[in-house]
Image 1: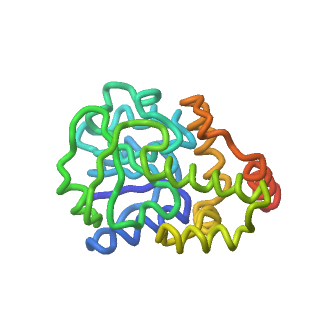
Image 2: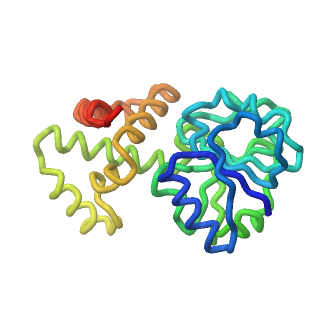
Length: 222
C-alpha cells in the first residue's frame, strides 16, 4: 500500500504508531504541491483544516486515491468540491486523538469499507456526521473550556480540577492535563470554529483560556 502523509511532526508520530502496528510505512510530504506527479493509494493530510485552500492541489489526483483529511475546525462540504466527495474521508487528527484504538471519521458521499480503516492499524472505525468539531473533539474542548471558567471563578485550582474530574468521572486525564497535551492554541481555535459555526453560548471561550493561548503563541520561538 503506497501511503503519503502531510502534517506536523507530532501528528505524524501519532500516525506512525498506528500504521507501524499494521506493518505499514508512509512517505512524508513537505507540502501538497506537485502531489499529482505521484500515485498514492492513500494520502493523509493531518493539518488540512488549518489550510483548506490546499484542496485545489488534490483535484487532479487519481480517482482511486483515498484522501484522509483533518476536519475538526471546518466542515468539509464548505471547502471540498463535489468532484472529490467520493474520495474524501474526514478525520479527527487533533493531537492525541490519532493514536487511539478507534478512528473518528465522517464522509461526504460513500460509506468507506471499514476494513480499509482497520487495515491501517485502527481497531475500530467510528463514523459521525460531517460537522465542525465532529464529536469527541467538540466534547473535550467544551469540557476544557468549562474547567477554565471554574478556574477563573476561583472555585478550585488546576490540579484540584484535574483530580476531581479523574476521581469523579473516571476520565483518564483531567481537563488541564488534556489541554496541555492537545495544545491550548488548538483548543482555542477549535472552540472559536465551533462558536463561529453554531453561535451557541456553550462554546463562548473563557477569557482565561484565550489569555493562555495568546501567551503560548508569544512564548514560542520564531
